[in-house]
Image (cartoon, rainbow, N blue to C red; front, side, top):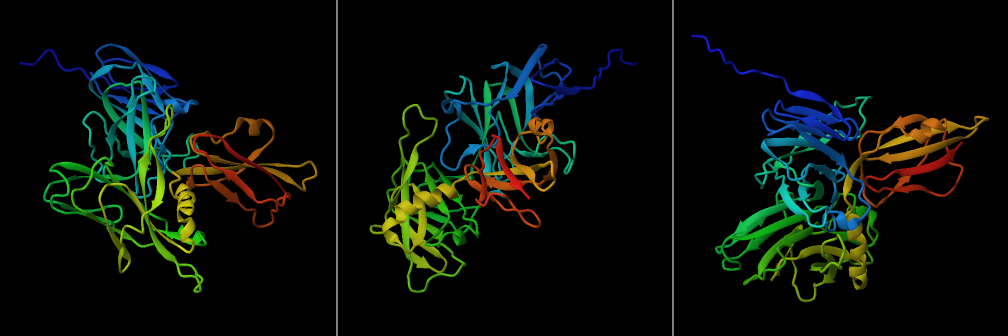
Length: 437
């Protein structure tokens, strides 16, 4: 006998939205025409017709940002989504474009959420090396986005962070940081090896910690050309062990690669290998930053054992450790602060866009160079004042807060003799104006 009641199939509602859209039990797949955010709601995930609002914020108050350590920064703008507290019958998915460079697994993305306007943030999930997550309600993974080299692409990035959740907080934040590896160490000891840099090892002897102790390891690698840019100092990868509030009952051995310098050195000056460490300092009241770090030279009371290309030493508590080979050991802590500031600059993938406008006699031209993260490539001001886009780059890795030096080659020469550079800041308009002939 033929069944009279058959399941009805209705295709999901698809389309675009500016700030908000209305969704019901039919499900939907919407994409913001302004920010590129994608929201996917499975069928029968809404209990009733609901208006979803979603936008990226430009927060001017640092106290409302998530707590960020050195080497951490937002991978995209803070996502404001509502109505806050709404619960769905099934997980819904948000795909948010991000602009941080992950450097083939050296860095990772962390999802944070807040329900009180940004005063208190909670870490929700961390993407591990296999794409799995350490949380049930949220996950984050890299997915494919726009087609490559599409001339109609509004955004300079095709990288998306995918978040799944059954309850909407007030705000989401996607943070880029150095990859944190979590290990469970028992009373029998453990030999920890970093997956980012296998030559970094931590040997915990038997009885050093209690059973079931959770330890995290972060390794900040050093670019092969980083040491060649310094004249008197070469550095090793930075190793961070946490939590900092435990004390080892027995000495723990840490192995770090020695600094490597491939340039020409002065044979008359012998370098000195120094071991530096730093413990977290309490942050100032009302500051959005987490406790900062102050470097200390502990070479005098911590013997170093150099075997081949690695150096080993013992510690009695977790902290941040760093090897520096310097020809000026008296100022090693001052040099370390300056070098670490450059090493900890967060990398982003941005694009350069150049606009030009010829002078009336045709002998000179005004150029305007933009370094863009999430801004649109078509600049309204330049379009209304007669400028024409003449060049557009692919994704280029730049560092937040660091200067970008620019040179004119070929038959172009700048009128001014001063060096050309612009300081890059993520999610801001980075502009350089220059006149060439």
